[in-house]
Length: 569
Image (tube, rainbow, N blue to C red; front, side):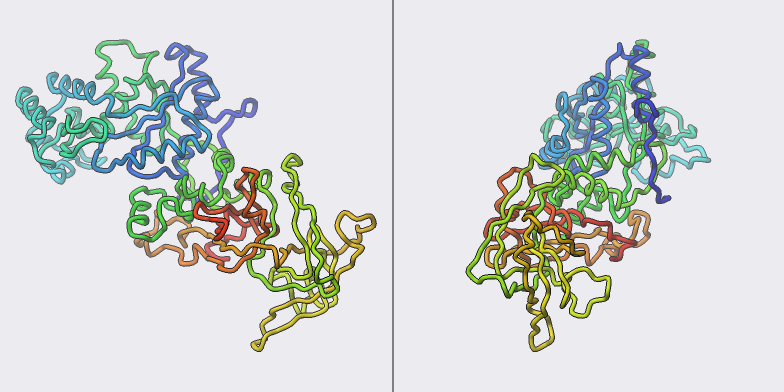
């Protein structure tokens, strides 16, 4: 798959993507009586990921834009994989992204109608019960260039198929012993038409229907019909369903019972999936990561799940901004991970509260500052939004500063702390470094400096310019915290295309835990209701759900600048 950054397919005047242009024309032409209804149909067998976010923004967003309605329809045709935990997570994630459905539907709502339709097909000689194994059926399908061969059960008497199908439904048939197939065309160049399986036996209670059914419809049989029963006008899905579209239309045509559906029918349209470098989107593989303990859970901040991104500190607006950035086309592309990070930076720069945090601390002593003096200084919460106000920080003789902000023997263009050089302590004073103290191993344990009492930020005449500004926290009044720094979960740009087992591709440096960091109290006791923080000069962070006042824990959402290059820092 080619790595590229596709541009949205939009019209210059209205900013409509190609599907929105189709919808606008359909509404203008009066199709479906000028009505617009979409649906978001996830299978409740896992947590939603960022790929689903793109579909959510399309399905719900297009309904919002054109005054239609979008339903949430849970594709619950396989009770072996579904769980109510996933259902609640799906609802929570959709709402977090900023959308609301018209109503909640289930594919199982239509099981009676689908059963009646299947019986009708059998009676018309258009479906039959097949007792071959799945392997035999697959072999007889042929290839795209070679016609398939008919099942020995293809001409089974109608009454016999009706009887056996009834036994399948009632639970009198073992799983795998037989299936119901549509009788269409074993030579059709579209292999989906080669007598597709439309019902299989699953002897497990269903979360919605209990033990009423023991045979369940396949996706291709349930999906289009559910759209039809539900009144969907535009069935929007991803490009892998392009070959399925003729079958989608075929079953609806069989279902219409002589009605003229030329202007009243659901129509399927496809757009490209969201693929992201250094990321997997397979729910099966994501589930394996969770079950095998290779990540903390579905909401691990390294996961591409919506709940993982939320825990990591991505805002709903940043996810929607990313989707808008990559756009909707008919061409599959592998989007750069850095684009997601860029969308986060753009959004969080506008909303994050600025706080001071020192992640790799070394003590800074202002030797000429009074030992018993403590000052309160004003710190602006967000320079991008005056309404966010300010908070106070304390300043005293002993501070913590970043170890990387001091260099004992610095080059000429080094503008941070170095003996004989001046820097400004953010929101405070200009200080001049006078030296450092080392332990017996030669490691620097303390930096010494003297301050200029007339250089306090905001004082008249305190606008003397120095080339460097560094952040700090008050050593006596700060809060000790843990900080987790995250990088992509995989080491290769396209793990889904790599022939190796995906477990071998995991990045051993995808998380780094800093055990001894110091943050100003406002970072822990922030009562503004805004959870998004910028650790000044470091990156964007959010408190982990497990964080407490006594044991603060922060997750880095993204650094201030793009530093991920080809899997290496």
